[in-house]
Every structure is written in C-alpha cells, then in structure tokens.
Amino acid sequence: MRLRFGALAYSFVFFLRTAASTHGRFATRDAPFDQVREIPERSHQDADEDEPEKYFHESTFSMHYDGRFADKQLNYNERRSSLTALMQTYVSTMNDIGAETWIMHGSLLGWYWSRKTLPWDLDIDVMVSEQSIHHLANYYNMTVHTFSLRDSASDSTDDENRSSSYMLEINPHYTNSTLDSVNRIDARWIDTSTGLFIDITTLRRNSTAQALGFPDAMMVKDTHHYNYDDIFPLRQSVFEGYPVQVPYAYPELLMEEYGAKALSEVYFQNHRFDPGRGEWVALSCKDFGTCGNYRNPVDGVNLPAISGERDGDEDENETAVHSQQATAEHIKPSSGAQTEDSVLSSRLLEQRRRASRRWQA
Image (cartoon, rainbow, N blue to C red; front, side, top):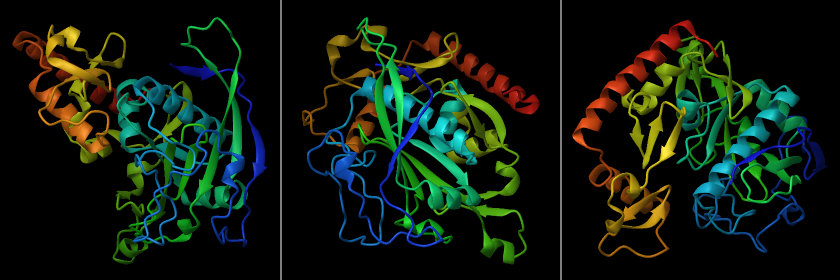
C-alpha cells in the first residue's frame, strides 16, 4: 500500500503539554496519550529501569516503534507507505513552520540513490539547527498535526481521503549540549496510528573543539562530529516528492559513514537498484529459479530455511543477519550479470560524482 497526499493542509488539534519555563523545559511526561492513541489499548513502551534519565523509550517488540502508539510491527509494504507519509508530513510541517531541517544518515543515502526512503529502512533520520530546536520546543512541543491522506495503491475504487495524525515531541534534555548516551535524540515526529517515528537530532557548535582552536567544529549528541562547511550551505532538493534540504558535502559524509561501496553497489538487503526505474526493487527467488529452497518472505525476498530457525518470533537483528546471509550465499546472479553490474556500478558512481561537482537539485 502506498500513500499520497490528498489535501495538503494540516491543523493543530490541541496542545498536550506546554512549556514549564521560558527555556522550553518540561516538568514531567504527563501528556494524556490515551487521547491521541489510536490502536493499542495499553502502552507497549519499554521503560528501562537501568536508564532512569532516558526520555524516549521504544516499544517492547522493536526499537523502531513508539510503544505508546503501536502494538505490532508493520509488514514490508505497510512500513514503506507509512514511512513515506511520515516523511512527507514532517517536511510539509517544518516548511510551514519555517524550521531549518535537513535529511541525514540512512535517509540521506536513500535520497542519493532515488530521492526516496530506502525500502529496507526502518526509520527516518533528520537534523535541525540549534535555533530551530529551541523554536520547536517553545512553541510546538506536543502538538498534533492532522493530514488528509489518500491511498493511491488501494484496490478500492473509492477516492475518499483518510485522516492521519502526527505528534511532535521534544526531549526536555534537548538543552543539554554535551554528549548524552541516553538522550541522543532531541525530538521525534511520531505517527500516532503506527508508532513509527522520525529521529530528530540537533547540530551544535562544538565548544570544546572551538576552545582548542577549531572554530568550525560542530557536534551532535549521538557522537557524530562535523565541520561547519560539511553541512552548510544547505542544498535544495526533493525527497519523497517534497522540497527538502541536504548537507553541502553529502558525498563525503555518506562515504565516511557508509563507505564508498554504499554509493555504487547495486545489490543490498535483498534489493537491486534498477537504473531504468530509478529505484530499489525487491528481489524474489523467482528471479533466480530457486523458489523451492526458500520460505518465509522477509523484506521483499524469500529467505532459505535455516536449521533451528524459529517461526514468527525472530527479532530484527536475527532477521537482518539471516537476510544478509541469504543475499551473500543464495541471491547472486550469474557471473556474466555480475560483470555487467560492476560496469554499471562504476558508471553510476561516476555520474553521481559529476553531478555532485556541478550540482543540480
């Protein structure tokens, strides 16, 4: 199922909680979540007693869902469409607010390849400026934004829109500008119907490095460090059909974080990049004539049976390992196709290098 926008207008439904001081700090997590919770009858939040200072707690069944709003993981197609809507609604809202934000990490890699979220991705990562996080905390924390969404891939002939709500929640520890192992995420944009969210981190001046004579040093609480000109001036582009900003030195940032192969390898996570369609396509055992050796579809591909494998209760880490093993050992094209794809990879990389030098959004 794939979603596209109907009406673009959104509305503030209500403020769940307001600032307790002019500095945007909040006393407690006292928001009445039962008023915006759509699916679970009870919270599935994983509150770790060993980390009492941690503000954001993920679900008991997955670290990529907010357990206050979800009771299960979505399937492959549901997750893809929900993440697309999540990104579109976030970008639309931030553009209307005027907050300075840009995509980073895995989302930036998806933008690089196809201007879309990577189909195997489980969340979205964005960054905001320090001025913007203060503005969001002071005026928009705990606001719920409702959008009218239309299901463009449904079998139904009805053209009716459905409403979906998203909540912006600011971590009260956002004012802490030092490394914080339990509060690395400064804010989240949360889908209240699925529990999926966007992690929002803040780019700050690195005062320690600046004191040592590095005036352009920047940092994020998640331990990433940058120079000012790695990020600025931000480039204008499009992601999931909406105007976005991306960091200036995006090729260098991506290669540093993921390696050069991430910008050229056309097979990854049971998907193949189709240059004709300009997108990642899920692989199937039908592509290789080996369906008899596979079972349990996971993220677009049928995985081989593994001795001792449990049915239906694998966690995400186990699934990822099995998925990578399947790709490496079972899902390989013929040697001739590999040679062709190697040439294709080189051409794609060179095209992107030329594009980055002359930059056309």
